[in-house]
Image 1 (cartoon, rainbow, N blue to C red):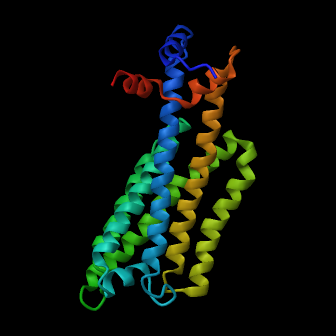
Image 2 (tube, rainbow, N blue to C red):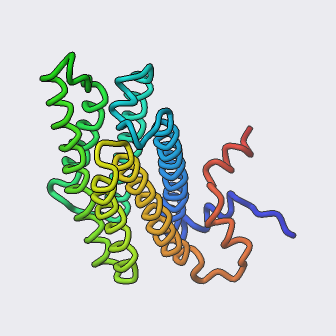
Image 3 (cartoon, rainbow, N blue to C red):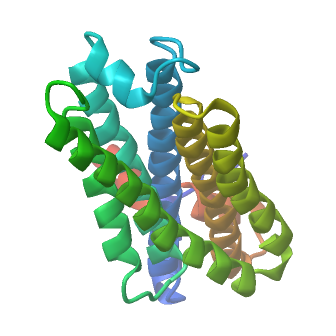
Length: 248
């Protein structure tokens, strides 16, 4: 097969005013990979931390405060919160979602999650701090709901084909969380369900929405192309990186 001349490809794209589109496509693919990798790590970390002790007997706060896992608890909160924040804000930008308070709600949710981990949950030793800890844990769920649910509903309106699936996801997250409280009450089962289902939902949105955007962008690069191999290179190769490699 004839070798691809990457410099020529770049020049052709610039002449057709498509080079910026190709760069944007490459960036989107990198962001999707980064976001999904971060979410997968947070998902695994959540499950592992929640299983350090019996999740039916102890809450995540109990596990983090009653045993020798306090530092791990704080690190988990930072990683889980940061992963959720990065994913949600990346999706906001991807979909050009304009919300006056959406970003603020997500920032607050992450802030309260980290605060919940930092504030001791030892009722007998620090009763006042325990009350504050309980309040911050409720606020993190509230602000995550206020930041994520309106966005999910907006996506449903913009993409009618996703309406049913998103409704099912929201039902799994919130109805499932309530059921975990009813069935297991004071345990980590509710928290594990809440965080795992939210992270899994963000993984789904990242996969679907980034893929949809990438496909739409790719179509622009495939227009008027006679050489399919060349067209594929324009879509899947970072021409700037290729140029740097050739210059070494």
